[in-house]
Image (cartoon, rainbow, N blue to C red; front, side, top):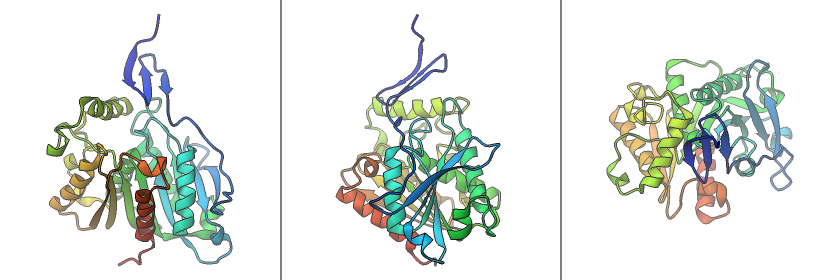
Length: 317
């Protein structure tokens, strides 16, 4: 007898009641390398013997030829907490390009994925990684690339989709638990995966097939959730929001993306709650969710890359 389906989120993933998971996208992986096009070197590192989390580190060729320490970007990949990895070709190619353009070091987090490891596993692994990066603050951490080349007084976080959601939730944790030895200069949320039980006025016309995938992904990733008004996915419901521990936020949205309205709403809610930082929204006309990964050479992706680079290279005010 065929096992019953628990969630059918084709063409992305099917999850069965016996725990089996069929992923249809985001399954390809490629090894780290020295990228000939950009000169960026990458390698995979297990961050501790007692942790399941690993990272893919990226360093530009210029770093090894200079004594100047470089800013650090901690990056969280997307995929609804369920698909894609830090070894996915789209992320490898994008981070090679971003690291070369911005002249930074990147730490791409390979957190454990749901449903095999339901939330909060991804959040916990991400937090473990941020603490691991901070452990290099006086130059005696476990990773020599960070000891020798990282400026931990200028650290950024970024992520797309579920990774954008993780960036927000790391900010909530940082507001409650101070990390010594690391200073965050800003964060970037690209098409962040936020939602809510009540549709925003601009979401009412969204087809049910699209909204049901958004909601089912969340319930599949977090089976014990209270629903789509859980503060983890609906920041407007979090009483701790004003304590978000960032001073600068760049939110990237896309005109045709189902999450577009939530990105703008996030900015609005931060203002209403008295959060004291600066938030900017950049919208890509005519584009859909994570277009910059699927079509990195298009005009809007090039503009977005330039914006991310300038955001990270601005002198702190």
